[in-house]
Figure 1 (cartoon, rainbow, N blue to C red):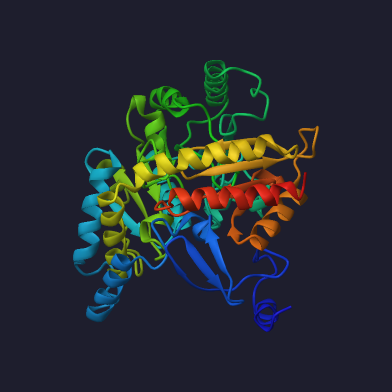
Figure 2 (tube, helix red, strand yellow):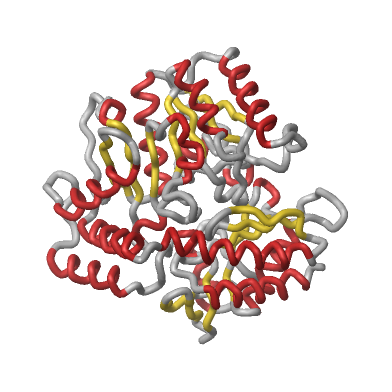
Length: 427
């Protein structure tokens, strides 16, 4: 055990998770690579939990941060903030929400917490619909709507949460149905649920469930839900913390795969927009955003430095068509991963889209989740020079792969090769 690991254990909560038997200290990064304190270079296929979205040490972002820090680092929202206004204007336009207002936070957890505050205040209801297998953050309110036992440490809650079918396509009571029948069954379940409860404030849903193992419903499910929600006056919150900014390749936002009946009422974002800087936020139509009847500010949300980083990062992403790169290179990577998975008896499914891929592991010949295999592959991939993540419901049996969106074809093929060798260690 390293001395840093010992010091970490002495001062950190016991529930603060570290990857690997011998935890890794990262010292620096460049492009799609990071270096450990052991001197080894690693190909990064997890990006600090989908947060290093464009590239490590992206010159445009580091320059913007340094220049802004040399002017003023902090002011709070009590003062006009040019970088914050400029980024809000761009996000409002990109969101697809009409008459949009933007509020910046410091994390996705805080963004979802704010969205819940807005929805419950607007609707005068403390009931929330959430998806089974979901994850929305670690605050008291966000934990209370998380449909994933491994990440929900308490049943105490300020909200009454009702869980809906549909977030996981290939498991559960409707898994055997075709896509259209699956959607119809989930809509019928929602209709039935709403017939047994007081009217909820909102449905919150990740278009692709992140911590849940990169699971998703058929395209159009949330559009079908929207027809039901609108009849009951229930808001739709799209949690885009992991799916936003073009990561899925085909769409800029995950909700656009379900956009037949219009954009969500509220959209939350975080992670990748800051490329490692702490940015989260909420977008909502003005009527919803302005419903609060008490004063509010943010001390750190919209910080001049983080806003400068976000502006530079967003500009780079758009100017270099990283959404298109996620679609092209992500498609290649998915092909390679599916070929690797087909040769491994432990792989139940390779799923995802763009540069957001999940590999679900089971005990060979069964449908039983295999978290031990996922941990073993995580370790073997590191030994081969590749960093990946894991997740997937309460069993944590899914390998999560989400490289920076500037990933090259060569790096995609290299990563798939390393991962293939790692998977062969578990059969």
